[in-house]
Length: 340
Ligand SMILES: C[S@@+](CC[C@H](N)C(=O)[O-])C[C@H]1O[C@@H](n2cnc3c(N)ncnc32)[C@H](O)[C@@H]1O
Image (cartoon, rainbow, N blue to C red):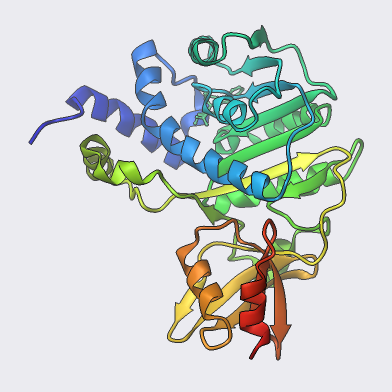
């Protein structure tokens, strides 16, 4: 069998991953060489990019785009977050500032961005203002609490924030704290996504302690035919099919959101003939029943998970009988449910 990864590469990746998963990576600057950054960039960062694609695709579906003309990539690493955002909204941004505690990472990210966007001004991090979108990615568990509190105060100066994290309970709960902190105080931010409302987060109720706000991104289908990815997944024990992530998008002075929408959280619980869908809306987070006999197409769609999960439900007898997606009201689906 062809070996796509050298033993040293695998050792380097295992060390990085162990630090990320154990939450110990934040203790010191772990970027030690250009080779290591390059290896991270074409493996873990690539995978993080698929999560960004999921979050940004939901924003597109919801008709949101940033107003800022400047990006700050905070804790940029190799810069996958800013590259994803630059690709999503071509022509929107005039400048990019890169911030990281590692000068090597900032250099690497700058070179990558410059190669892809020669007209973009790439600047030293010179603070945040009302013309700034801050992107943050996979850093929250590296920040001790006092540092996170300082960061949030700094973030208040920005106009918009897009923050993507791992889809685990702890990281999602931390992002909820970020939401609740920046919703209060001055200036305050409105939630753009994944929230469909501006009420307090329903996951903070006692009954919902075990749940968390996470979603699943779709990796590009080519990777399942790619021998290098296959080998990497076996060597590092990464399930390529499952790509959970948490995210949060905030904006100062965001326009009001369309009313009545809910967001599904995680995967539905599947049973014979029905699913239980964890659904977040202005009134809170609750598990709703969706029966195959009421809405077979909707049930299939939700099980496949190939959508953002933002729906306006039609309820009857306490059950979901139809769901309209936020971008495209689908009359068929409504009819499917309402005909019952
Ligand atoms: C797991 S990496 C993620 C990098 C990149 N954002 C991504 O999604 O691929 C976390 C990054 O946070 C940086 N970092 C950790 N603590 C930091 C701090 N206190 N200030 C600035 N950067 C920090 C690390 O150097 C590293 O580049």
